[in-house]
Image (cartoon, rainbow, N blue to C red; front, side, top):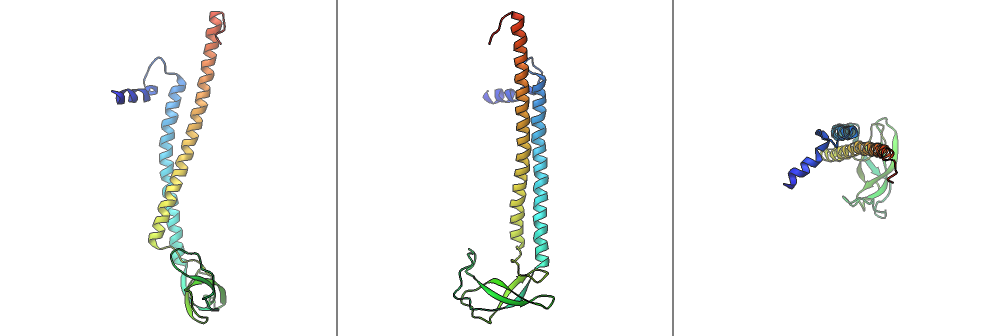
Length: 193
């Protein structure tokens, strides 16, 4: 019994009854349109963001490659790179860029590696040192989280706008009620409030 009464209470704006006002009908349509728009725009934004993240990861994988670099200094007394996945340290390395120029930068290398050793570093298409591109699994995970955040943000923004519209309708409804009470008070010849 409580479920049917609650369903009746929620849908009263859609049925004809003497208590329903024009602002109630507008509010019902605004809420319905807000939810539909929040779902559609959230889905669209989420899919777009996930697609963009996947394309960026594909582009990184296509543009970056590994090269053999020479360690310029001993890596044993260096500070850790603060990565949780491996115990590498920062050290200076030299490598040859695709245009034939020599490049020098710091890279993460295994600890206790002596100077002159060969290590592998990732470079971009210009020959600059870059981070390792995400694997396909990492890219899918990033795309999923990016899409989820974009969908939640867009849907939340639309629902926030809908909530603001409902507040405006409530103010309008209160102003209408105040005007009607004013008319009733003047008909009776006295003031009630």
